[in-house]
Length: 236
Image (cartoon, rainbow, N blue to C red; front, side, top):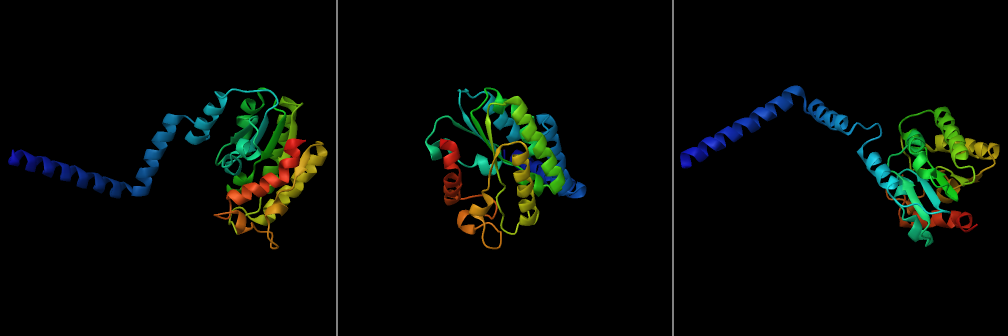
């Protein structure tokens, strides 16, 4: 028995060493990328597993009339809006990491029963992906047109992008320019623009770290500030 055990241990050690050799020879980074690629091919997804899972979940949720939809990325996703406003008809349709084209792709789920109001904040991840301001605004205008076409009776509220704290790929000068042009679009399409940037900025136009834990996302106090600045639009 001891002899068999010894042979088993030797074989296992051999395979561990051989596997390590193969990984090092191929390059650990390249090897891991290959594994991730295989997994992504199995998911057959353009937007990722998290996006697909959330969207499938949303599609199976019951829909009521006169709903209020919060639509966006992780900044939207991380809040419990219905509890924050104490309203059951508020639905959170935020997906972490989402971009403008991701919202366009899943818009049919959002508008399927013509919500009463839609509060939209999107675009910070497009900027983080090093997209140009012109490209972002062009896609945003397309999204606005799509919403107004698909659910003309819904009230659309464009919420400005929030400032960041010295974020390399999400610079505040670009955020301010996007917000300025979103304000122009809101006038063009006669929809409401809500300036949240000023409520979160410092005198240097950076995100006030009293409202954040990482310079990009919000803490609990930050969401209370957000609530304070839109509560009149919710109740209207």
